[in-house]
Amino acid sequence: MAFSLAPIVVVLAFGILLIYRTRNSRSRLPFPPGPPADPILGHLRILPDANQHLVYHEWCKKYGNVIRLHCLGRSIIVLNDLQSAVELLDKRSNIYSDRPKFTFYELLGWKATITFMQYGSRLRKHRRLFNEAFTPQACEAYQAMQRELAQSLVQRLTQQPEEFDSILNWYSVAIVMRITYGRNVDSNNDSYVKIARDAGTALADAGPPGGNPIDLFPFLQYLPSWFPGTYYANYARERSHVLQQLHDYPYDDVKRQLADGTAEPSYLSGHLERAASTELSDEEVEDIKLTAAAIYGAGHETTWATTLWFVLAMVLYPECQKRAQAEIDAVVGDRMPDFSDRPALPYVECLIQEVLRWQPALPSGVPHRSTQDDVYKGMFIPKGSIVVANATGMSLDENVYENPERFNPLRFRPQPEGNAEPYADATFGFGRRVCPGRHLAVSSVYMAVVTILATLDINRKINDRGEEIIPVIEYQTGLTRYLLAVSTLHPYFNHMNTAIQSRLIVSSPPGEPDDGSDLIRDAGRRILPTVVVLQEDVLPVPPPSFL
Ligand code: HEM
Image 1: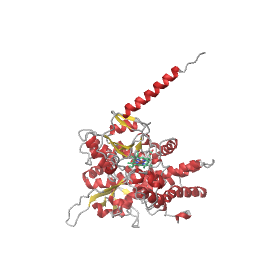
Image 2: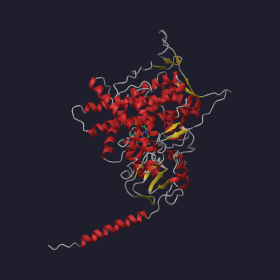
Image 3: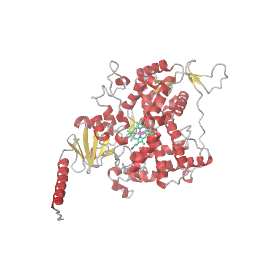
Image 4: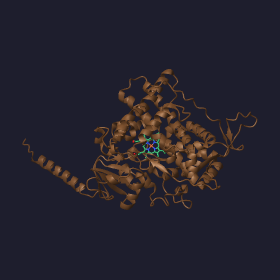
């Protein structure tokens, strides 16, 4: 049979022409608008190195909810409203689920950590491991522990109210350490906590992701250390051992405990036990180590920052605290609050949601990266763009939230109390990269908030003239946003002008000898059980490098 190539050639030529025309016609579309840029450097000179979330928000108010910044050929697309973030990151998640490469984090050793991992089969595997451990059902298994730690939290706050920032830090650390390694963390001096804190500090020191010179100009990592702009590359290399410790030390320790028969149930011990009968490949060992470290890395600071913002909100808006306490008193009566009370505490729920909206712990989320050219509302978004879903801009959107700067839990309630405004889901991100720890996060925050409000009053400090002091909000933004009191380790008590006072009195139950320590109760009404005595900080055979 005669076989002609002509039709194939015509179809191929037509296809190529079509692709060419489509590409061209797409790339001829305008980019999203943005502030004026320099000819070659683009926006390099005006890219914010602090408070990105607020600068982006201001630019978006001026130029539109989707803006483009560019730097030496690299596009940064900022999405400042929920609609565009849902349209792109949720609905087109096949295009927008990658992460940009962050050279600083890579040199530090965070490359294979889920939060910064490129999209692909390994990422999906890590997310599967996370999802199994943190579904709403799986999180129920952690509730007894969260309750116990929240009660210990208020005991500690009662005893050392001026230490509230480090005590709240302890609470969020203790939860993730117990889940991940079965570790009972009694204080912030615990060896695991020290390692994890060093890793967190190394990460925070780079500022907002993508904001330091070696992220912008990765070639700087190959230049000698005296060359200007190489500081962060050298810093990351020097600190990479800290990350290695975070991955190896608890893993080796839990393995040893399993061999001794002393391991507590945990994410890590569960995985190691299940794998006991099989030889794990190097990659499987890495996967377990890395996801375990990521639970701490992603779960601790965010929860801590949120509980700190809660304390600040109670100081600034005492009427909200009173209303929540009245609700708790009416519903809970003379016992301690529990998870089962949550559906009956709608105001407390709104209060927690308002903390999450008012001050999202990750104020501009974690950047995504697009893997294909795309068009949104007639604007061209080139492949490889860094896409920032600005959670702060979304929570300050005046089209969605009335008087958005104000802390107002009732905004979520239907009329006449509120305007039935939506919860700020942007706080936990979007699409295939949405926070997999969100159910645990909210339940940890709930337990801390409800237990504190049931047992303590958070008041304004009084100055020498007997006047209430209104604290000024000061914070520092890396990936997470903390109150400055935390990041600079100022004694919060002076800095935040906050006073925590017990609604309870410390005493022993009637008829029992007063040993002066155990029980806290409020004039016979609500009794806080004996503080849980957590295991001493015993340092288990550390690797030599650690000594
Ligand atoms: C109030 C507390 C928390 C907030 C506000 C928060 C928020 C976020 C946000 C905004 C992202 C980025 C989502 C995106 O890229 O679109 C994220 C990612 C992540 N979060 Fe959370 N988070 C919190 C607590 C937690 C907890 C407790 C855990 C662990 C148990 C956790 C684990 C993770 C992980 C592993 C990722 C990376 C996911 C990925 O890249 O695929 N987070 N979180």
